[in-house]
Length: 277
Image (cartoon, rainbow, N blue to C red; front, side):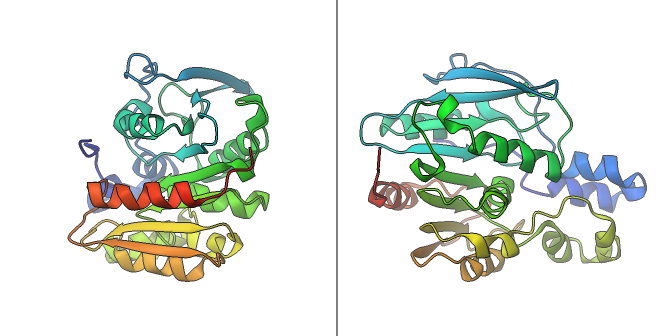
């Protein structure tokens, strides 16, 4: 699978900050943290045998891609990163489905045809609502039946979801997680730390990870210049999971971690989790 062709997490933020564009903070912060592609592409058009499910809450349209699992296989609840759309992850979804895993891939507000304006509070509420109604998408499905896969921004979404709902999944895979968005600014743009108190999107993963007790795998590139591997290590250390592992991909960056050797370890982790359904 080719790596996602997208700016890494917070590249847009740093660009805007560097241009002095923080004066209209709320809107610019939103554009920087959530530079989603709103283009709606059906799973079929993207080459994925999944159903596009439309839901509406509070007058806002929410789009999800859904495929049930083969017998004895888990469902991947995939929480995507901060750029592109669901179609950009088609290669990943294809590999999940080839292994018989089910898939639930929600599009955040403003992404992939979903309506609304994204923010941490709204995305967190949307995901908690979804998590509590998984059985509406795949009959009999509950949080304990899913592997949460959080990609970059989605790693913070996954950890907050568990902290908010106190419902543990079958397992958690986090790709390039961060301790918090302010911590990323401190590392990547330290000249703007004085503006951190004004940030509205925090995604405090280091704190939220303490609520996690399900098995955890973290994947992080040692040469990730957007989210340093030290932040992945800190999330790993903070996690309350008794069974947890950290895969440090040597010379790996932010967008090139889906390598054959790493994938073997991801599949082994997922397949090791006991399915109750």
